[in-house]
Each structure stands twice: as structure tokens, then as C-alpha cells.
Length: 246
Image (cartoon, rainbow, N blue to C red):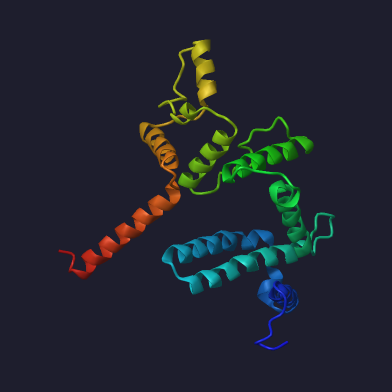
């Protein structure tokens, strides 16, 4: 194979798997890594890819996507070494996502007709709910798989999106302030508090959560909007510094 005669799409992915296998055996640092030790890098590389995307630099984004891809291959290589029956390979990872994509796109692979993107999303949610039911999780909340370790704005938006797609009324996003305040022994008040949530909510917290809802109603991603505002603030501070901080 020559440089002007590239292989089939995906050929370089096989080369990456080979290189990772070699590093795992021959490099002292790579050989000692675990899922846990790599965890911070998994998050860091995703943020760096997002930063490159926001910077509008295609070459930088391509490079950062390679680092994200490395994390996937690295974790799969570590998992392949498991001897307790929990192991899997990079092929298992790929086959799993392929099967999921085919299953959740019946309008592409199974002859189902859809009217547009909105119906695609509804079908996706319905198929996902059916998968949970088949797995014995039919009574589980639609919010059970939302990771709470993500940034708060993204978390709030994802919770609202999941709840909205499940048919939850919009007014649930208008959080009562001080929901966990003492109820004075009033059973009815206790029931109201339980329905509202056990966590106390400050006025500021409720306003921020409502602001996320406002952004979503406007078709905006609150996390990306705040990041854009942060970059604008950064530029203003830098301009102030260059001007002598006067």
C-alpha cells in the first residue's frame, strides 16, 4: 500500500489497535494503566476536542478526536485482559454500537417510514424504553441513566430533555424554593415536599434551573451559551490587560 493508494475506510483503525497492543506490552507506562487511572484522561480529552471545535480549527479538532479515539481503544485493550468473565474487546465495543444504531434506526434499516427528525427522536425514545423493559427495567425512571458527574448546566439540560421526551409537564422545571424546609409535622406538607424533591433549593438555584429551561425553549444549549459568554469575557479581560489595566 502506498501513500497515494490508501486502504479501505477503517484500515487505519486496525493499525491503531495493533499499535495499542504493542504499547500495552512494551511500554512501562501504558502497561500499568487501568480503567481508573485513565478515567481523568477520558474526560479531559473530550473537553479538549470540544475546545478545538469551538475554536473553529479543523486540524486541531481532527487531532483531538484522535486522542478521544485512543481512550476508547485503550480502555477496550485493558478490558480484553480481564480473566473474571467481564472482559470484552474493541470488536465487542464496535459490534455493540453497530447493533444499537441499526436497532434504533428502523427508518434506515427496517423499512419504517418517518415524517422527519422529530419522529426519528420519538422512535428512538420508544425503542430505548422497550429495551429497558426487555432488560427488566420497565419500571425504572427515564432519568436513571443520566450521569450526575457532568457539569451542572449540562446535567440540568439533559434532565429536562429526558423528562420532556417522557411527557413530563414543563412546570416541573419551575422548582419551589426551599423544597426541603421543615413541614411542621403537616403530613400534607410532607407529601408535597416529597413530590417536589427532598433537596433544598435556593432562590438562585431555582432561577438558574429555570434559565436552563428558557435556553432550551429558545433552541439553545445552555452549556455552549455560557461557554461562549466565558470566551467573550476572557477576550475582554485580555484586552483590558493589554491596555495597561487602566
